[in-house]
Amino acid sequence: MRRLALFIAFVLMGGMSASLDARGIEESVLREHIRVLASDEFEGRDPGTAGEEKTINYIAEEWGKAGLKPAASDGSWFEPVPMISYMPGERDVRFHRAGRKLRFSREDIVLVGREENYLAKKVPVLFAGSGLKGDGSLIDGVKGKALLLLLDTPENAQDELRSFRARSRALIEAGAEVIIYVANPDEWKMMKRRVERRSVRLEGQRPRAPLQGAVSTEFAVGLVTSGGRDWDKLRAKAKTEDFAGIDLGVTGDFNVASKISRIKSNNVIGKITGRKPGSGAVMYLGHWDHFGYCGEEGDDDGICNGAVDNASGIAVLIEVAAKLARKKHDRDIYFLATTAEERGLLGAYAYTRKPVFPLEDIVVALNIDTIAIAPKGAKVAIIGRGTERLDKAVEKVARKKRRRIEKSDDANAFIRRQDGWAFTQKGVPALMVGGAFSDLKLLQEFLRGVYHGVDDELTAETELGGATEDADLHVALGKYFASTRKFRRKKATAEKPSGE
Image 1 (spheres, rainbow, N blue to C red):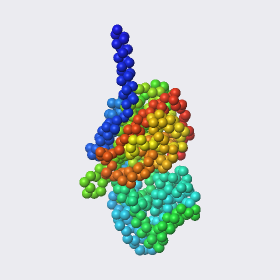
Image 2: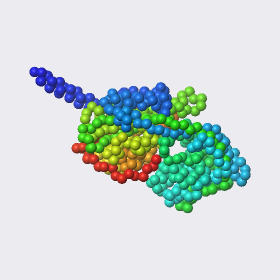
Image 3: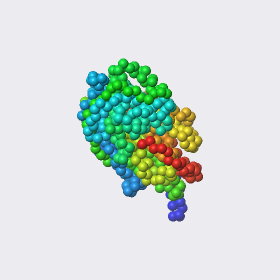
Image 4: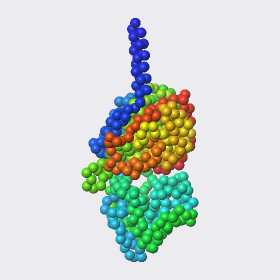
């Protein structure tokens, strides 16, 4: 009789577990996580602040409650990511042509040095275009020059020079003294805020230029037209095959102070242990950071709360972990919440430098970022479509969830702007999957609106319908890729060139 009772209880418990497992992730649960993470109490989740401490502790606590085990290299939840912070201080910048001082507004230029004090006089100013010749290779003759550098990427740019960060690194290595990005009119305020907040680099990362910053288009046009040149014609010239940079006949005197400090930040790493050691691992990742206090002086609200970017992604990571931890899987499943994505994917790069699980044994890395965009019923887009041999597998799982597929590779426009890119460059199959990037018009509305500003807050209008469907899809993807029967492991190929 006792055995029968135990058997009945076992069956009932199994049925209850199956019922819980079949139930989708609820919008109200995601909303509550976002409410906490994007609250003023978390101060915008800026790395190295009290907001970071609250954020990473919240993630670790939630993953612990879900049943994950800490998986950092020291056995804790937290993997240190040491960084260096640079902020602009006082500056005295002057430009001259033929001995005559050019007049400009101090508000139209912002610069920060890699040392606390930078002083240089009569630095020649070169209009560098995108930094590339018409054939897509790097321009010559940049050593010792101050470069006006456009953010535009030519279609024929070589793969390793497609991002403006990669181009600026190459120009620094070629000897550029000062790199000044020319911000488009609709991007100037955001660009200026980003430089004024602070720039951050990993300790030991490739060196930045001795001086780096940004100017408004109005400022750049003033420098160009002071010598009688036409700005639009100059921009057009930068796209021709014979373009090699144009000396503007202007020199700059720079006396710039910078505030430099060290930051102790952390990635958060948890794990669901698989039952088949040596069969590889699935990795989920998403960045926990945002910009902290970032409003204009005198604003009533100065906190960039980052509700959509990326409290929404962390909310999904927490709930996907809770779902997957209810059952054993063949492969290990890792969850990685990264720091300083907003400063150049730094937490992701830090992990790929020092992985706690071998990169070549990761069967897929699934990045979750800015997921609270699309409504229910959105198509499933793949950032990374065509770059890995996983498209059919993802589509198969999505169709079982009755999701429609976005067949274009338009979303790949964002492939270098998200944490998965750090893994892709190391030969790890890395994708972003879901509805948020299937409607690029809807996404652009967000990017041109509250993105990276004080208005990215949780409201009653914050769209979470698509986020819940994408969360459920990621649970299904985890089960599929963590099964040695459903997905046969293919080891990563040779390491690709790093773009840190």
